[in-house]
Image (cartoon, rainbow, N blue to C red):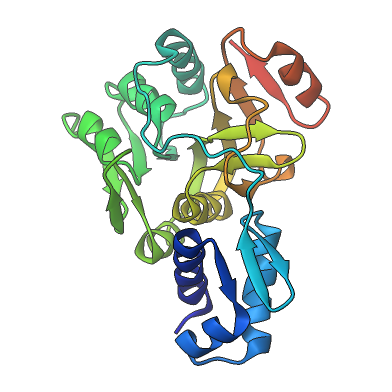
Length: 251
């Protein structure tokens, strides 16, 4: 079994049981305790667990926002962010649109463009762009998460890794000084990491309600991204604070 596959399965177990023992995982995966301890070290680094003597527990002090995306919230802000995002795109670009409500608005804003290639792991984004034959459209494989129409899992990560992306428009569940960029789903986190690795430019798109929030899993630091495009009046003090760490464009 590949390391990444085993770690995904360990994440599933921890999310269900809230706590695990090293000996238990060794028996399940037929590997040494040293191997499992390395796996748990990585999951602790990601912010998912806290290790203890003999095992690990799911962290309890992290806010987990609802998985269901509320596409009707902050519509005006997301439209302004999308309009700004379009100005970053040039003919011939290969862009990746992450799953999420803000990136969905970007899809609506670019659906009349020509001469670009769009890759996405979001079925609703793909559907929005499918009526324009002048856009080269690619959809990643993987397992469908019905609540936000995203593709996730090992197949998704592998698929994303095959592309060379000019611009990634990346969604996030939370943005904070302490934890960087976070999401509420461990499998989405792995997909986002793969997107970042494949992209020349990484632009985070998020309305101001996401600032100061911490979701369950960290997937990127501010060093991993070029800038954040945001809009809205919420959390302006936090936005101002974060300008010391990353470029932020308010539209």
